[in-house]
Image (tube, rainbow, N blue to C red; front, side, top):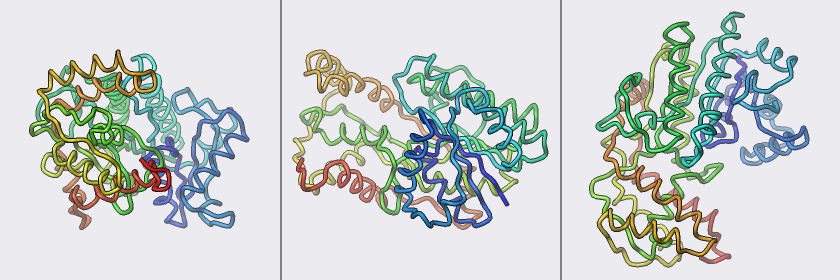
Length: 379
């Protein structure tokens, strides 16, 4: 029997991991969830069960147990008896929790990323000391590259670099904790660096709409009266949630992946150009019977100045969204790529190949539009 301890079960990646783990009848899962009370914890589990389509008699549901805690706190902020219970039963650890926000203070970003990395490494050490740890899979991000030019290789980062935001910086610092656990202590860890995670390639489903969907709203032109910066040849590397989850689960069951870094991303060749993504978004919005303004391109500097001015002058209801636009523009400005040769080679050894963006983007965008803008509510 394999017993997995999973953080981030309510996130885009973690919520895709759980059903894959439980497809094996000899696997149980222990979820760490934030909740203000036991009643709130039970409600969160009900919400997750609904998302996964579980019934009261579901066999999967009987193999999941939730714990009320905090991944960023020592011992996950669990009572001593619960922490000891987990340490005495778990065989695998997957850390996918994280606050994917780009405008946090560096202190708050570090609390989430660095604090949770330290807490999960400490737990892995305890499992290893008891001879129980089979595997630890740690979810990082390709964002640890920061503003480094060129294609980021699937190796540890030593060079000094600037970052687009505090999220990237904190995740880079967190990786160093995991690196020391691997290099200095020999813990069996695989580091997974996803790019921007989007909906399931098969049906577009995702538990939360995050950064990608904000970018899609921007690319529709509806927030900017059709004004766009000139994107040139810049690409946006995205990866469907089910591909990320499948890679993490498969790696957790493959001891040969210990010590390796995988870039779970589309890579320089398959990542869509922003202009291509913009066209797909505008087509999807139009097909959903939503008004899309004309496409007006401006030099990047002119557009950025207009965005800053609009953020100051816009009504309060729009000010927050517009104030974050410069953050995303900075993120989208760099012509970065992420080398994923190790990941795609590992996929090929298992008879798999990454899908083309054109094959899954219509489903991803369709699910978002159907959920965010149901036909009966109008645009």
